[in-house]
Image 1: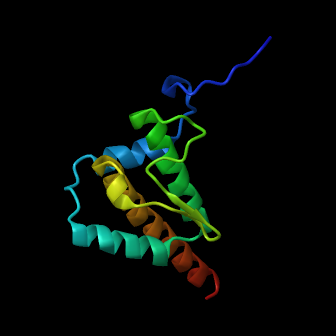
Image 2 (image 1 turned 60 degrees about the horizontal axis):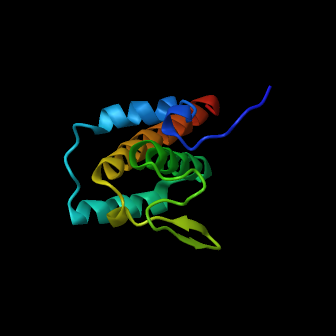
Length: 123
């Protein structure tokens, strides 16, 4: 028996978080330039390691499914440096930017919930 790897989106593994975020983001308005700058600031200030990794997977998954980028390609003209990968929101499709905004809101809520649980545990 042999297995093969394909870059075809129909063979991409399921990512339930992606589909949840995509559905929630569909009815959002497009972000203004100022809102995109605020989103960038929030991403830089509020994203922990887990959030950064999930965000990368979300961007990568979107690029494969929606734009048919090859799986071994970094999409949307990122800059790679010692600190990691930096993406430019202006180089991304508006649907993906809305998904990133939705993801950040959900992730920030999760972090706050975890902190609250930790406080309750220590009381």
